Length: 33
Image (cartoon, rainbow, N blue to C red; front, side):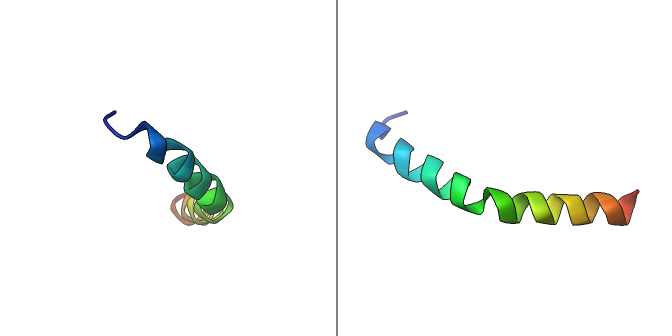
């Protein structure tokens, strides 16, 4: 909230990591299913 200038950086980092997080989540879903 107090650091709006950081938002684009955080969004960029999340989007960069999204395929990795999605792959991890999918592999976890497969293991627990």
